[in-house]
Image (cartoon, rainbow, N blue to C red):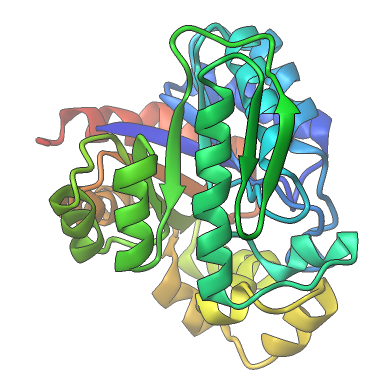
Length: 320
């Protein structure tokens, strides 16, 4: 099992994200994962830097810790050729520490280029084509591709790492899990869904299985829940809501009924390390072997200190 730390790009500026990643490496995390957004979920979060610039800086400022996108959408805002080039370069400058997390995206970030955000079935078909294009370009040489939704014309990525970075494909259902097995090197999820893992493995997937776990560290559960409510109440709406709303103002309107009790249910709140270990165990029992802690507490440095001194030793000692 590996434990990752979520760099919340919607809640912090680029320099602070770099500082947190350096601290996460010192605290003992195995990797950091960073979302790739154009907008934050809520205006209260107040940030959304360009992930690829930050990743390049992280590669230069860290030595050991793995780097990952969680996740990039290569179908509308980006063309997959750009992501193929960006991921290859990031893998090179990080000396092979990069994993490309890929998904079908959210309207929040993709509509900004003036293109319609398509229905989920179309997005999944586009994601398949994007993965095929990235794989094609990573074979080297000049390549062309003529798909139903995406195309490529006589393109070549000149700087390719050896080995190539893993691709972890985000899946919320069986169809996407099978795509992850067929065209990816790993699975990415946001819930401890054992059926998703089994579908991925039955379809031939043998790679790492990533999942995010929402936590909120503070001295009391109520303090933690209040902080999570302020900046992370968007997380309890479910993917059908999260993928379709276009702007932070819409997420603010859609979450007016969310309360602290909802955050207590959705996040591990407080400072009891045993509760954190039990929550991680739910994910490992479901078959995930890469668990990412996404902290919504009020003090990130306090959480990193807690992880290094109390949580990391317990997680390393836990069986499995």
